[in-house]
Length: 242
Image 1 (tube, helix red, strand yellow):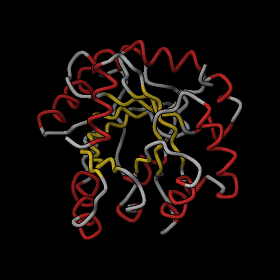
Image 2 (cartoon, helix red, strand yellow):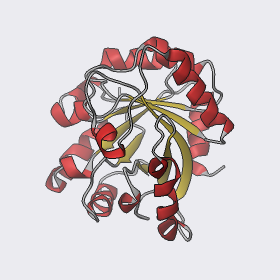
Image 3 (cartoon, rainbow, N blue to C red):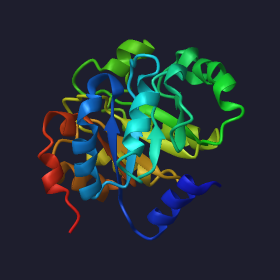
């Protein structure tokens, strides 16, 4: 067990709830990095995720390198495909889209990434990624050509999460998708949380502190916020460190 994953587990065991800010290189202006990361550093954010469904080649590496100039927070890749991988990051969520049945996102992209990863010093964290319907078609659905899981079939979401654990995943990531109209319900989060014994990440559709706390109370160990900060940076003011 290496450092970032070990620290996530340690924080959870001590009752700490973690917050990741997701930055999409295709939707973020590099010239805004210093100002934006300054707000991240002043907030309760514990991790920075970088990635998106469609990202121009080399954009991820440029952004990660710039972020590192302004923050010591762990930078973790959340890649939409193998072209978004860069050794400049501290860790990589090795995502398998276990809610879908497209082999390219179950194993294909992983095989294609090995030429970049076989000599890496970056921490690689196997992650079961589960897309749940959110009221709109998301970029993940379009790019991966997969359908999200119906939110009213909680048992199927739970069973998929448990299957991820049995496959040896270190994290389960429940996602409503970027720009989701509906965040994941507390009942979904709670049902998954009580059924697995590995860290649970929850993202998509969380736009205010009340929704953030609701996700934590339902059992999320790590909450990921992206679009809300992109649309309204004042949200950071609600999440300033005391």
